[in-house]
Every structure is written in structure tokens, then in C-alpha cells.
Amino acid sequence: MTRHFSRGDAGQAFPIYITVVAGLLFLALAYLAVGQAATNRSGAQTAADAAALAAAQEARDQLAGEWVDNIGDPASWERIFNGLGVGLDDTCWRAAQLASQNDAHVDACAPDGPLGYRVEVTADDPVGKSIVPGTENKRAHASALAVIEPICEIEPPDGDGKDDVPPRLTCEDQEWELDPEDSPELPKPQDLFDVHLADS
Image 1 (spheres, helix red, strand yellow):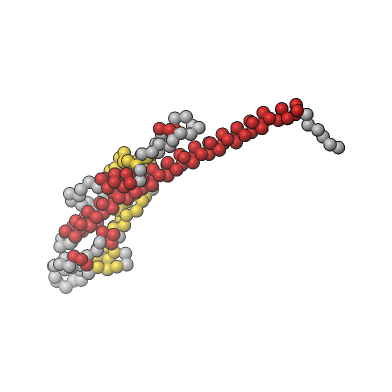
Image 2: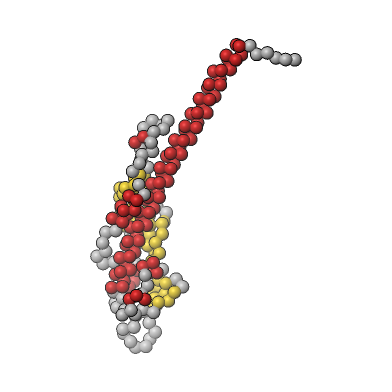
């Protein structure tokens, strides 16, 4: 049997159709807003990670430089490897530099213990307009913690009676024959310390 729809039926269905389409459009815009916010947050976290690593790497390089300067004073090595350098310069300028390169700026940067740096950043670009009121001026915030980890073991020299023989230095799987007069063969900063992100 053939069923015929009247104009009245079509008229009743049209508002329902409009409502369904409007609902789907709203959901699409909502997902877009969530995506915008997630992208902005991800960018801020990338900037925070890069900034914290940069500050820690700069501190690592300074500690390594101090170790080279004091290679003839083995009594100071443990202090340096524990992050207790003497007169180290501030390294947060590197954090600001890397944050800027990732479209963010540093809100806070400070040592976290002798071998860590904690950085907080804010994204330069706002989330942008969306269906959520007030988001056009909202900016994502993120923080990160980078730590410097000594990777060397200091071993006393063989007992040969020579006071000027430095201790042996084993960094992971490599053993270094230390010669203060042959600095090109000395370990590099990355040979002495590992720098990585930690849970903040």
C-alpha cells in the first residue's frame, strides 16, 4: 500500500531537521574549540620543556667548565658533580630564549635544588575566538622541570705513591685517562652529565 505524506507532515518535520542540524553544528564547533585549546596547551608545554632543558643544559656546561678548571684539584670534583658549583652564572636567560623561539614567554624560572631547573611559561598567542565566551584572550600556561644527572664515577688512582696522579673517571661505559695538559681529550659536558625532563 502506498503511503502519501501531506504538506502538514513535511512542515512538522522541517523544524526537527533544523534542530538536528543546529545541534550537529554546535557539537562541531565545540570539538573545534576543544581542539584549539588542546593545541595551544600543547604548544605551551613544548615551550616549557624546551626552556627548562635549556636552562639545565647551560648550568651543566658551566659545571663542566668548572670541573675542567679544577681538574688538578680532585678534592673539589664531588662538590662539582653534586651541582655545587662556585659562582655559576644565572642560566634563566637560556630559558627565556628557548621559550621565545617556541612562541611563549617565561613567567618564572628558578633552580630546583642544586641539579634542577623549574620553568613556567605562558603562550604568546591566545586560544582565539570560539563558541566558549571569553576564550579569545585566554592563553595557555605550562610548567616543566629539567634535572642534571651526573653520570660519572670517581675512582681513586692506583697506589703508586704519586700525589699528582688524578683519580680515574668512568662515565657510563667509558673510562677517561685524565691529563690536565691535554684538554682536548677531556670529557665534554654531555660526557659528564645527562640532562632530561622530570615529572613536575
